[in-house]
Length: 472
Image (cartoon, rainbow, N blue to C red; front, side, top):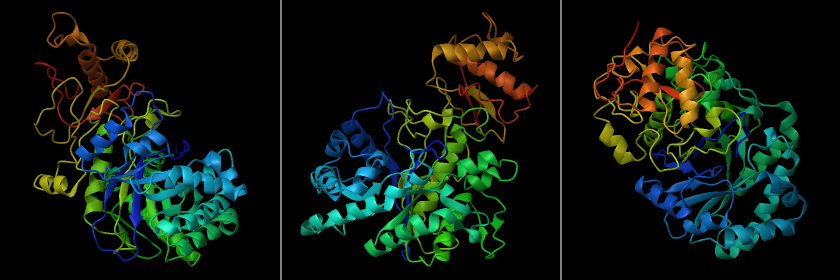
């Protein structure tokens, strides 16, 4: 799993240098949770969603077996903790490939091996093992060559944007000096020689959350905006992810590796976050991922590489309840463990085309109020605050007590016999109280959170016949 500084949202964006074809959408399948469906059910879920590419974080046997004969292409991973052994002993790597790759291929359509993950920011300092481990893995491809697999299965390693010394403007992109000679150049040379590509984990969410006063939310979410002109090359950027990708391309170009492709192996947006995680909400996650899917399937490249299509693995398939760190870490999923959608976005070209007649489908909230019914009435820019699903009764009650007490929310309408007492459920009452607090605070950023128990919606909530106020 990714270090906390760059949480995973599983996205693999493969930029092929000369392709003008539409990209493809896949998804990262993380399993740091104790409540996920079985791998067999996951395979069926992916099929029903029209997804035929998936990225894993290991080579767990039951998972690889479940994907056999499924028609779904799989990216597997050698975890960071194995890099030292892989670098020191070729026989270890040979045995690993035989046990974790050859054993399952071709029934399980393994298309790439991710060696380690964001090792430059790994607290265990596995950087020095990365390139030797990758070379050892590639050497084992000689044993796969008998089956003509040495060209079918690529070897790479996901890179965090923190490997860049400079990323703004994109044209100034450069790698950290201390990484260039010992790691970056050997890595890029390895990728060039093997015909592979660089995997990149890129999260506009982090850049926005840390600089919300400087970065337009619409720019981060692929919505219509004025754009940003790169002062170095004059190119205009309409979204932050393109700028991040091009910063990496610029850094590679500075080292004379223009011919190596880039794959964004992770990107995403959390649906829930802590109060200091500005922008984390279901509607923003739906906008980011939904608009990204549309952009990828359009076939367009970045301003610096306009003919390079994007292949995307979204992070992540599920919310993962055992991940540590801020609340956002556990809420990148498109699905709850119950297989219910956290929010609804198009994932296939057919769905994108079907929604094209309603341009606002992704930009306005597609997130139904949990426990209630989403109204189809246009909100005309108004927002409301409601309780999030999936939180414990105790946490929700504590948040409700705070809103009605110290928070100063008007909770009179949810008292017994009052207009909004029914439906008499904790979630309905909490939603009313949260919204009252949110409206009293003039809908200021961070006032609809309650420790992750609430989020903002752009359609008027509906619980029975109770009308939620829009201001005080």
